[in-house]
Each structure stands twice: as C-alpha cells, then as structure tokens.
Amino acid sequence: MLDNAGTFELGDESAISEGNWTTTAPKFVNSGTLTVDAPNTSTIEVPFDNSGTVQLTAGTLDVYSSNVTGDHDSGAYKEPSGTTMAFNGTRTLGRRPPSAAPARWSWTAARSRSTPRSAWPT
Image 1: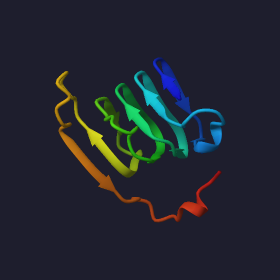
Image 2: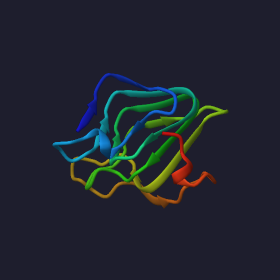
Image 3: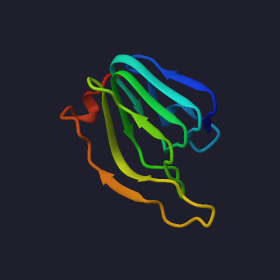
Image 4: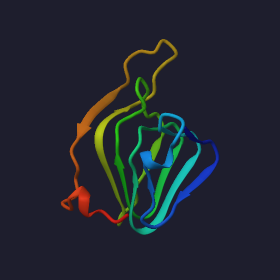
C-alpha cells in the first residue's frame, strides 16, 4: 500500500500501476496532498482513496481505477481551469458519519478521453 499522509507530487507522464507492487495488494491512499504539476497526463491505475486533497496545477490526472474495496473519497479534488481530472471506474464520494451510513454520492464513469488506453504514454 502507498499511504500518503504528507505531500506527494506526480511528475510528467508518471503512473502508479500494479507493476509497482510485488508483495502486497496494490492500493493508494491519500490523506495528505497529492499534486499534479505536469503538462501531460499522469495516471493512477490501482485502487485509490482520497481523504486529503488532490490538487492539479497543470495537465491531466487520469484515475483509472475504483475506490479501495469498501472505502470512499471524503477529500477535495481541486481542478482549476486548464487542467483535467478524469475518472474511470466506480467512485464513491462523500463523508461517512461514524455509523458508516452510505456515502452521499457514487457513480461509475467511462473514460472521458478519446485516446485508447493502449496508446497512453508509458
């Protein structure tokens, strides 16, 4: 598991993918600040939860996965003009009270980009 409780920056055309793990189930949990400040597309291709802040300052972040099983996003996604946040997979958003009531929003999104996944930069 990659657990960011501080500050983590994705560089240009970087990817967090299943190939980065060899001994544990892949997942990325962000409770800190994840920043994307690159002119091209960076990707997250493993189960991902955000309880902190995802801040785009340039380029595109493509989250090509769903939430970690049984979890949800309660953090902020900040996408200023000129940047793109793309989701593929089921995302569950909203804060859950201690009673573990259902989250406020959930949706399944198809890729919003026209480029086939096989043509993505590596």
